Image (tube, rainbow, N blue to C red; front, side, top):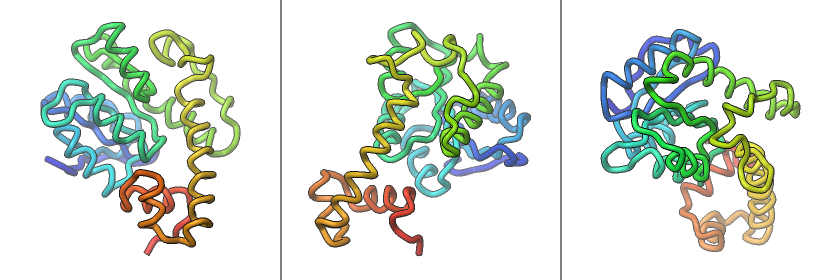
Length: 213
């Protein structure tokens, strides 16, 4: 199932749906394809990481409870290398679960039975916000406080997206400094930054600091 895709216009973007239950994957995928997403599926967090690195989706919608690597573990790994929007939708949720999901970097936390009908709307909203931020107009589409997270804001008064935007800016600065200091030696950059070389290359390509071959 890793990387399998279904029909979708792709007019909004590409969404990676992650769930170990085939029926749940297909239901969520159908909701997103209805609003214009092209869909790729993954069965668990490890499959999703492979699909993410290969296909570079614009949005991830993931379950929490999955074998091998669960949704929280997946989001932690994704946030090491990407700022793309992430929705977590789970059949079993609580305030404490929501808080943990938001801490690791989830943009929206939804409950399957209650929120399934609006997962497409939420995904479209996140894509609009992401596009606005890339265009330098991050406040163009205000987000209702009830949708931002469990309590509306991340610690310190910033939304999760704003905190990640700041982290992205800091990462770019660190990469630029290390590129200069290491004279473009990616292996040395990886050693100094405590990352593997593939992660450093990914960041450099994503930020336009390394040409794709």
